Length: 340
Image (cartoon, rainbow, N blue to C red; front, side, top):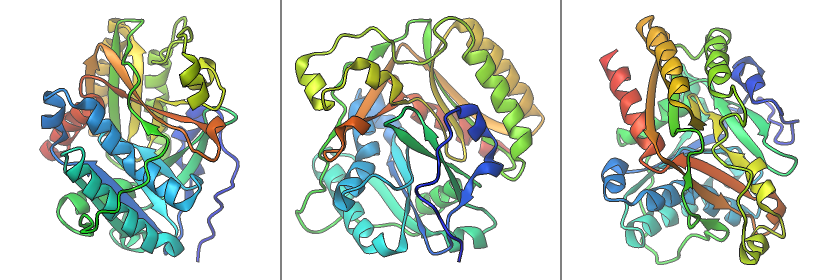
């Protein structure tokens, strides 16, 4: 059986993580969990973007609280999440997902789809699941995924396989520390860009890494770069207490606005000229059959925060676009994939 080291050193340069040959395979007996809000596009059209993001992050919060640890690979995907589950935690993960889907239905009035798939079955399908760690700061570390396995699992669960039904009991999930009550963050440079780029062939890591680095070079050029969280926001004493006595500078450094989870997923504050350059680059790569992509522009970014009760210094901040963000970008990407 493959060994998996959850304590492996994290990479500090996000560009390094574009080379997915560096990623560590998950063992065959682990599981991949996927959640997503059903028909999130309609909910967002009704202005419920905060509820969608809250539901999207709910499984991460509930699992970490149930296990008293957030030391497991997970990624926020806007209207859902993906995560890895140790075989010894499969029963508890199933219970938590049953509770979380029931909570989304009964409290948020949103359908939350959830499922668990074994890594062994994912590999039998021809895909893989590998992970790496990105240190956004000294206190905040985020997982990255590669190999195409998350997207394969996502497609299977959306097709009705491996799904987990809502719990018939009234026991709610423990969502302590999760909030989406922060004010939307306006663009400082022009527009908030939500961008998804998926390689057509997940085994060609080096080829995709070249394109991804070109994208980042365009979007992160210039003064202030393109981080969507500005440096100069004042926070109240109540907020500082919620963050464990930490200030806004920690929010900035702990924010998750760049990730890779079989898809390069970016929420960035960009100029119109930058977006045009990147879109031209992406269209050319798509026409060569190398990628599919989706993007969406909006005026504000939206922050969903998770502050572990046992270690508030490691507060995590997930970014999405306020106008539909990853959900609308995903619709564009999926349309391209189906056309291909």
